[in-house]
Image (cartoon, rainbow, N blue to C red; front, side, top):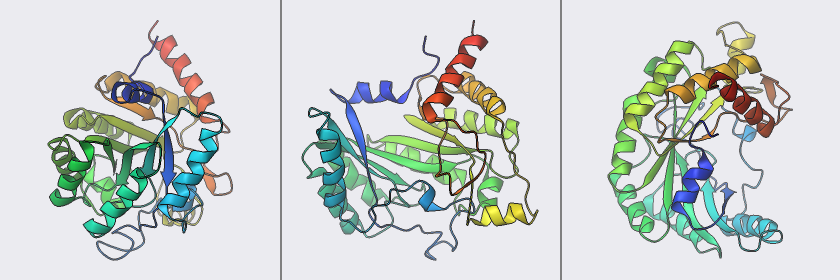
Length: 295
């Protein structure tokens, strides 16, 4: 029995065959790093913890190499180019569109996922992406992280929850699918606050959502703040986090597909939590807990 709508359900409704995401690092930065909005970036962020080590190569080179790797084993596979690292709508529109079109020119690449911030899309860019979406599906994933503005201020996000609501509305009105990303366990957030974020998600109704546990990463401001005792962080046990995820599933609008609940930073960068679980192992534990809860 399935207890929530997962990402494979979402993809199956939108594509006629199996799709593989190919991650692209297109050399972007963020507006709260380069001075557009602020400096230093989010306090928890070390982009090396989730970005592929392929920056510097062109979009074509990156995608071609990744496609060749999968094509040897799965010759019928089709692909989604996933612009993941940093803020992938932060730049002149003509430059952005050239990168997106370069990705779609790769044989087998049928769609785009564009990771960005909710305060970094314009109506003009969304209009252009809506045109692309007529022939090649476009999905925009917004890093929302929390529905609580005080939390967003504390971690230097440099945007508000209201920005997220507006971005989703502008994107949906153009027929483009939207995803939202959230971090569970941000500084100062209680369990009730995290569940209130789920209520806020239900009100916005994105197509997909990603959750993951806060990971304390080396060489970040948050790690230095924690080391100096300036900030207190909740470090979930596996059991506590699974229980929270079960509550989220029970509370989330079932029409919203959940892509993930955990993320895994490289071991040499991760300070906490160090659960020692692969993603599939966590998913098995979660499904077991859901089954026990809903007997």
